[in-house]
Image: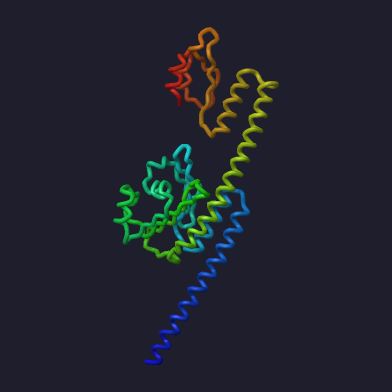
Length: 276
């Protein structure tokens, strides 16, 4: 009896020591997370750093970061990684994905595992699962009162995670990540604005001093496309004699059918109703 009691006590002590060591390692890692990502203003580097740290904590096979555009109510996925390979997911309206909406609108952590799939479906009736995920954990990313997006851990096969995700540790990573993402996003917008202003200035100089009217209009279309990320652009000018009419003056990227459609005077309300 005494030997058995000592053995049990030794195992408890050893388990406690292991747990303490794990917590110390997590705290050390979280400190490094804060130092590394908060000092970086490049969005791509911040995203990869977040993935690296989460992967070290969990050995997660699937991970994504979603950024929310509140103005347009859309979600984009700048980072999606599955089994070490990067994927591209299209931009989606938030309302089209109930799982994303659950995390982003309620600003709350959302977890799904095989034993709790019925509970998850009560929260979000259209979960995009053909088969229940082995594990899904969505954590909101917020800075102050502003929701920036979310990060998610996914495990949809039979392989166990390296470690069961510790929610407090991952929430701490999410807090650090949110601040870094906000700073990187603001920096990216500032750089983009400066680049766009420089491009506009250059285009204006070319249009004013160097180009014929057709070339100037083409440059204006190309500049608008580059700044907006559009695939097509066109310039219409109002008729001097009849302001209700407009003429296609230049286009870039329009199909031949569209160019033919806009030949000759166009009633301006019709032009607005046929935007492409």
